[in-house]
Image (cartoon, rainbow, N blue to C red; front, top):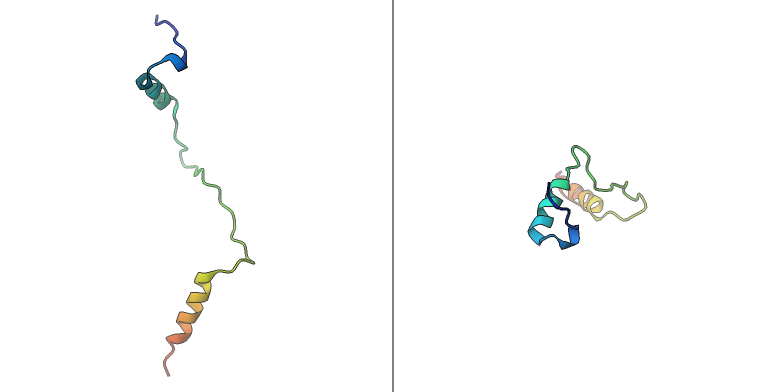
Length: 59
């Protein structure tokens, strides 16, 4: 049986190995917080699309 050594006293290499073992994946869950766009905010891209559409009309 191995003698217990506190985490702080382990070598950096051993600490890195322990951290890698404890680390898990999020699976199918995406941890990024998502919020709906603010409808009152000015949207530059929306305006650009409108100006491009009106200039391409040929008579």
